[in-house]
Length: 279
Ligand code: GUN
Image (tube, rainbow, N blue to C red; front, side, top):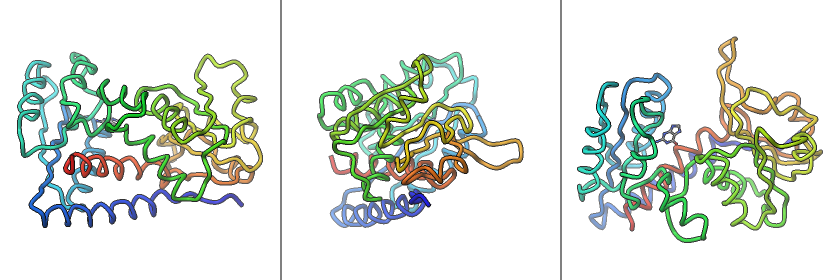
């Protein structure tokens, strides 16, 4: 039986720690506020945004909601971001992605002040991560590091294989594992013989966006398997990029879906919001 890495429990621990930190900051007169922008009403985005606002309420920081219609122009959105950049009461700004197709996502990310970019998407924050300087780190990969550390899984010296090279997960994930002294391999859709590369991993982190793609044949006996994917199956149940039932008997430790990486993203967003308050 593999060790089950409990993201629900660990994210709750983190949120409780942050709640205490926020209370102590408030007793010194330091208040926090996160501005959450959503353009259009993509149902999945609405769920994420609702959960982010709920987490703010739980840890004791104010959230400001900006729900803009789908037909909002890019200039209008950029003007709102610039107003929030200048607002001293707002210390974090988040624009839920994806934005409508008539908007340039990178331009929107670039417009958010790096010091308020609690998603860690701005090139200045990404650059800081590359050279090992302080900055906001993308929440999902930061959450994976916390899952590993708080589950007692050694990273230093281990071979970590990251499957997926997105700007939000794969690339920052590889950099964070490198910072933790892992030997890192990044795989993607053009990787030759993906199976045999994955099978070399002590820690296998999967963020490909394909339901149950990683089967037992990809996994070394005793490896730690972290599943970043989340998909709704035809029967209504959720599954990840990893075929849990097949891989669990082979793995040494594994994250479930749901209840693994998912809850960690919001916990780390809250961590970044608290960091923004204390800077
Ligand atoms: N869309 C999917 N994940 C994220 C995220 O972490 N932050 C934002 N802003 N949008 C997202």
